[in-house]
Length: 282
Image (cartoon, rainbow, N blue to C red):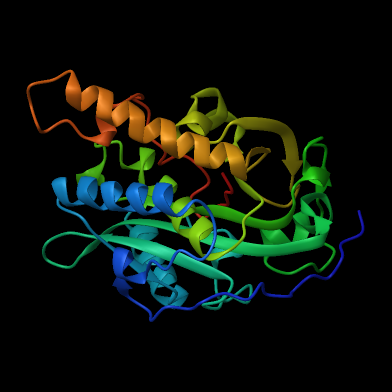
């Protein structure tokens, strides 16, 4: 497989680091009303469970948190795509969302890489995507959809929830908020992520909001095994957001309790097993 070198950053507005997520929002692309409403409702849901969401691009801090939690057995090491020691992560091509409790401790993370793959595609970039740099590492792409994933893409990963916050279905809306933010800032064509085969069988792609699966991408030197490509075209990303909001309204209308929140809506599965330090575009 020949990998085309592609490092052009799509121009975008860079907010300050460690800003409240809603304050960092400037809708340059995508359906303004839908994205604004989705981000606002998501922020409300986060507040209900005691989280304060912030927009960050200090990946050294994410790596520090990851190593600390991995040493405690609470997380897996970041894959190279989100490790600043292995690839170039800067405020123009990557961001991560922190969910902080009332004491300021980070208890939730989700990260995104934005790839300008105009003129190339995932099949050609799969090696650099996973390892951070293309040094000819073993990589076998059999996913039929991989050549289709091109243009400006958002790849989500580094998804983690502190044990004290698990069971609240945060993986239902935090990744969606990350994708909504990405779609507001870049002219996204595709959203995608990798999911390990066992977690695909648990239904975690739907939990993430990904509509399609394509088998598979193999990295023989990686201990993580087969990676299934989960992907969604941007129009379907917007449709998923609209459906998510509509379902929330229906659930709120059908209960006398005002405590109904997004995490009650659909699934009982958790995303913690999905490629901790991964990728997504939905």
